[in-house]
View 1: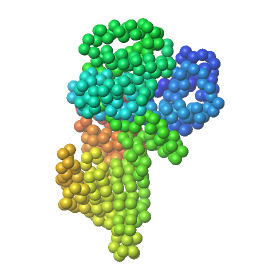
View 2: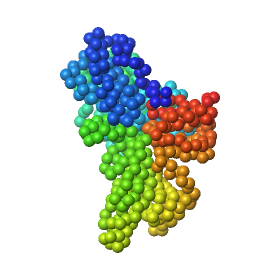
View 3: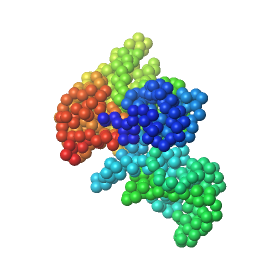
View 4: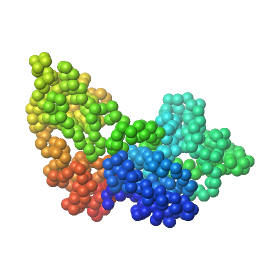
Length: 189
Length: 343
């Protein structure tokens, strides 16, 4: 039981998944077919990347879960290439989650012992962390930090300028840049 | 992956025009920075009412701000800040590297712990849970422990092994190349971040930590030298010594301590514990498994004895729950917590 994740759906097939989700019948059919003809090699492919068959099975489910939540028809001329692309993103998220969990754990260790959030709180906190981390991905670290100082820690523009050793107008520019990406997934120059 | 329950958003983020997105963010900032926010708030309300796209844009912002608020509560904001802005490789970079690597080989690079990229330029490396055994051209036997990396640089005058991270165990061979050409064996040197070790016909291990290094000698002796200190120390068989660099840059050798052969049991794929603290045991074990194994302070001092296989960390943990008053709680697939049974 140790290797099981809180997130991994304990469902035996994608068909079962599809019936529990509100899906158009044709999409459900399409997914079931995609699943039954591709799950074996996809699991094998993930296994070569991860070296662990349990984890590969978990991530294969995550891959199909991602298709389920897209709620759109999947145009698949080359299912292997398509699934590999989605699975790659799942792998990277998985790896990033591992990094974030470790960074969070390291940060917790530095806190006084009195601060010990309950597992559920830690879990929700981690989920939000991952979501925000993903939204800020790709921004330069200094831009991220300006945004986090301002929106998370409530520091004043002036203090951020001092902490990051940048000018007031640069702080403002970074906040707009990070905001546009974080709230709207858009890049500006 | 977190669920959002703001149902009113009908326009996709991507469909908000760039100019509207930017204006919305500028309004938000103006409001947050204002000395008299209520005045700005009125203007924002007018702007939102002027066009339904403006309203949609504002809802995207509020939606994500509620998630930020979850991170910002009760003194946890700097943890969030520290975690998100910790130096790491971005998704985009990872995707690029992943595409390249899939062509090159199918190894489990994703399991590498802190800096997966660091290994790429090294001659030999292992992921978490992997070990590697090599025989070098001089006959030396080299074992790489879990999550370790070395470079091997053999030249006409020197046999150099650079420990980039982790732990290496060496059973040094007799160098014939040097003897035939220069009538003198080439010295073997193991370099690490803080200095180097020169063995004299010996079996020994070098382990790299963040700011120190530990040399354990099982046979023969090793001369240990920090990179910025003039004097060297000799480590004899059955002894181990550390070399530390303080935060202020001061370097010093640790005291000589005994080491038993069981510390090198990892070269046989085993961990040998004899009255070992549970915390220390779990620390060792966690080197061979991805993720975190956390130990509650109440059980940290329980004693563990026995010989355990490193290849089956999960099974080892399970067997511990039978032998000790502990239970294991799984927080996520990378995060195990060892707790007292009655907790």
